[in-house]
View (tube, one colour):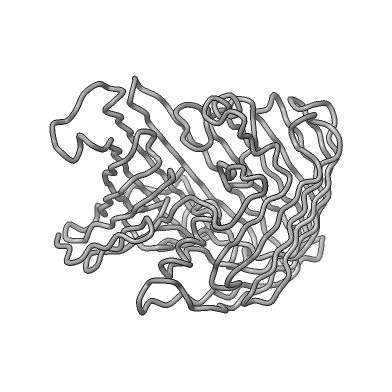
Length: 420
């Protein structure tokens, strides 16, 4: 393996004549009211729970985002250009666990010349541990199915600095009514009826601060139309931290059902099952495991297909190398913290950094060709690798290698957050 040039730019490595891949900084571009810290996780489906709160308080005393009422953001992507975004919460969510909760988001895309908004209102009952809440929401916004791979903040940095936009987008307009139920803080349920309109968005900008002659990918067109049906999710979260968990479970089941009798333009069912385990073995040794499965039935529009590859998924492969109406993804990491083990490997570089050993395997296919039970190991693409990391395993330099090609180059990525 030869590397002719290595540049370090804005917290990301650019490696010429080998492979270049970027997973940018988890950070916020913009300002926040009252100078409070950013949210710890941008995945909207992960609920706040008391276990996460206890560990968070140990590391961030008197710095709770729950006290914050307004938030000012600046995003960047290839369909909106610069997107100014303001979020406001007239009510605090978790303080009483009951009463009204209102959330307001208002944004404007400079290149798309489009106002975006999201409004929601819900009424809570029975306190925090067993909170029950009916609610209503209405929205018109730029949406991406790739939020589980990379956050909007990270992707904005990649697009703005290095001409890499890892998300695909469409316009989502609609409204819905829902109910929520919390059980002991760790288990949450949400289900509702929604009427949505989904529309294609063209690429509107091809500018970045750096990146040479690279160009943004065209934003792929979608099968637009009207969608009337039901959405739901169940989440169990017992992790001790959302930023860098060391123990606990995270289990998420998502479902969408758009039946024929509601006169939608598409009739389908789609399910996503995501299970993660964080298991300490001894002081300084942690196993991290993830399995993500996707299945569908009916006339699944192309924007709802499962696609992955590259950052956070199969790390030795190109972005979105796998696509289908079904998917299976497995990720494994073994984290070693030399300071807690009280041992050093005796190599200069490894003595400075901690070590992660990882492996990924996954596949995507058309549901008409094969059932899940018919899968064999030959159907899976796989990679293995190592990462040099900091004390909690978030900041890392990954070296990933495909297992099916002996001569294939190593893909190197620099990350400031865990992939799962």
